[in-house]
Image (cartoon, rainbow, N blue to C red):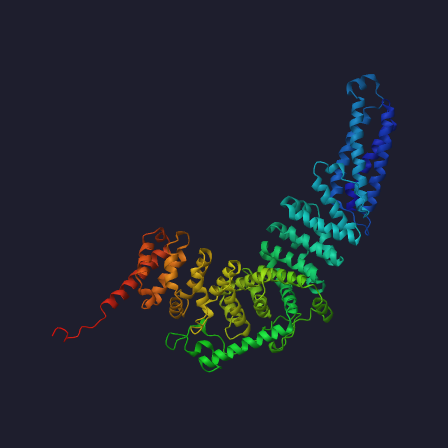
Length: 628
């Protein structure tokens, strides 16, 4: 077998050394001592060979191969020395110049080999009394420590496996080299097995270790090749909350670096399991009450706008005569809180969105009850990590975004955006990534972000609340999400742009992001650009933008946005201020003119503004009787 292949040669060399010591003519005592030591080494090697071929055993091959290589070199040196002591006359002894010092060196090598093999057999037997490090790793203590911990994960008792996995996670977290050694020395297979078959503590620590190891694309790919996708899907289905938390965290780390893993995880129904986890932790009363509030708000707005059965854009918000842009025609049918998927092998089942029931078979009644009695902090961490995983899975992946929005995830995101800290941030980031994909995918945008959908309206309302908070970490992605969805909002939704416009008066990082989001409401691709431009101007956007144009490091978006507002709504009173024209003229003399987009639009905007100003200056008619 393979185990015997790399052990056979050292064993054969020990037999050759033993025969040579029996034929020695000089240094007989030294050769006899060597023979005794080599005989012990031979027994250790044979024991290792038996362990390596035992199907029930857990023989750790990586240090074994390295130790066998060193043992082979030591045996070759020993054999060469002992052969010099064979009968051959005084002349041969003088020529070979054998001395007692040579035997001392060989004895030290043999002692190191013996200690290496004893250490190897100890860890292979699952014992925890490792007794220090093997001499072969004396120059690299971290390597010896990693060997020990991997061996414990592979062959230890349940408690030792969990403790060793935790140690490996800490080592991987310390620096990049440790993580590389863990993977190179065969740490992935035992960790993967522990994740699937271990105790809850072992599973939790194994998942944590795998997440810490996924630091770059190459390592993430190696983890996936080791079977991570199937292992994590299994854990998300049946494991306790703490294990699921670490699994979600590891998934986020892996898919952050490996784009192929995002698709693979989505194909394995992992997204549905993640959504089911956060869905089951949201109080049923909260979900139902949110739905009721959104439906009530929609009914009130429908009555104020016209017939409740008409789509928003058919109430006169189109702005271009009778013509309607295809992007601005949401379906008149009210979408349910969670659209059913059409995947035949899905483990989900759909119910009416009105009843607030779970969509999934995956969570049994027992599991739900266990979660109800779980520590709130544990549930909070689980939500945060699941949301992070969904955020990373959605990044630049159309199929995953569709899978997420086909579930009731949007409504869950809306509810969790009411929380604070990591849960709120990760929920906002998940929505932001889905919106970023939807911005460039018309099919996803139309299917997932209908303004007639209560779930979508709940998400939008929560994003607007987040935008009005004082936390830039969530304000910025929330504004990006609204900007990416700029084409879904009808003209009557004037309250959408005001909270973003108000952020133009905030610190420069927030103000710049607000300008970038508002810019998407005013571009030519947005059919309702004129109406949105007027809403921005009515929210005092012009005066804020004028101030921002004088910050060179972030003037691009404010200048282009101001130009768009001028072209789209040049007759608006807010643009009559001399400061607007001065700001544009100052920008025309700045380095911004090196940017093609600015060089193209700024002269047009200045000309447009001057024409409106000239028209107003000559607009007063002259009465023919005034001269009399």
